[in-house]
Length: 192
Image (cartoon, rainbow, N blue to C red):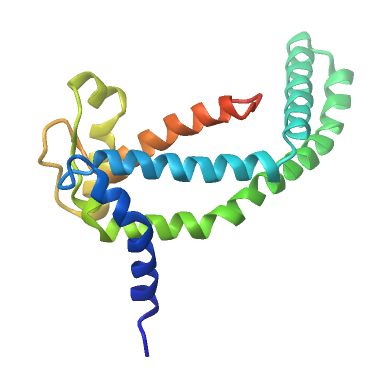
């Protein structure tokens, strides 16, 4: 009986090994991670674009923000009647929040399995040995020492590469940047 993980890994190797082979530095494939981050960002951004009603989400956010602002102002003024009225409307806000949450999960349901499979491939490929050396300022701005500390708690040991990050943090930095660019390009009104 064939190993299902072996079959999946073989299929992923067929798709991603050509990208890895084109990397100018296959021993430290930073460019490959950047390309994979672009692919994943593109998939998730397109899923968000077509599965989530962006206008409705923006409208709900605006209503909730307005209600919160009114409530704060009424509390500052000490207007108990207005506060009570606005707190009664908070149940509507909770329903809106629930609707927003439900809408937000739609693209995640579609993209979850492919992203997990891509992570599985990256973890088991040459990418797992990737080390990016950051300038000291970027190292501190990205809170890398904090991530190294958390990683040392979870995985044991400690980071020994000065100003270096591994494939996962590099992937997260690339994905964040790519997602923001793609969201602007595809006409999203909100940043996240």
